[in-house]
Image (cartoon, rainbow, N blue to C red; front, side, top):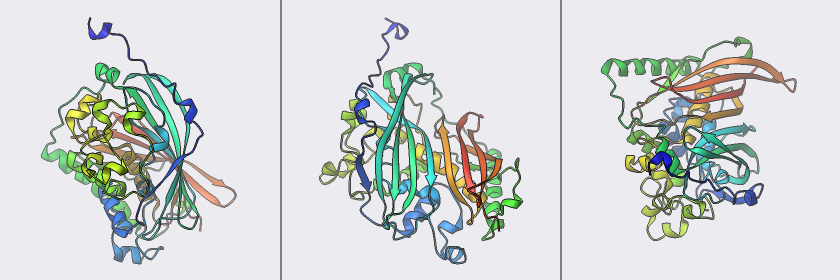
Length: 394
């Protein structure tokens, strides 16, 4: 029997209904936010805004000290917002991030803050995809609450769960070799990066006034990469949850094998009991569902050609990209981003944005909506997003 004649894998989602709308255990890190957590974050996200790492620059800012970028909220969770979007058993499956929607409520995260993340599965749907045939798009909410009881942010994540065998047979991502960048091409990437940094440095601590913005205005382009296993590892290690003993509660109360991950990929990731005896078995860089990101052999096992980046990072790249343009007086109120293609090792990621709407909400909140596109060097669309940012009017 040929592969094409083989019976299709059935995506059994019958266990999911009983979980929808039922809160799951909250996530909480052991330690308060440290200023070096913020520095490590922006370094891993390739976000060169001195407000978030340079003490002298930050002292002269409106905040008076280093403050976290809005993208940092996801780093205060124990599952980067993923846990409520992957409840229920789907046998012989794997999963990747499919998108994030964020609502931000006002409080900024600073060193000394301590957040608790309250979670609830939201909904799911099954649809046919080129990547894996029948595919489940599952959503879940994470509400970030600080030590003062203030709502910092609400994240609605989409997790894509699929049958591993179908993805391997379809081989949609079938280019295992990495691009080799010439010296001239690398110089071109540096020039784009310099333009993005110049936008930050020229605005400094000034306000980007809403009256100075026009529909059709283009943001300074940005580029990340070329990506590598080293850069993806740096991203993984920037999440405090990945340090031994860093979480007060595990990411979930069920094991990966109970969620339906293939036995080869299940492991003990986030298992607090195993962490006390053999913590390396709980590290997603080495074992478990996350190791496909950093180990090409296991990437190919789940239908990817080589090492690939993290969906939570892609969402952060978009938030940081718009925040850099908005400046320290701007504030992102809402974003909705869809992730379409992963960032693979050897690829570069290009971000472009355009102001597509200006409006006033509730009489005094002046909002600019920025449309963002993220592509690789071949023009393949990696992500799209719509980001609402409030800008000062006076």
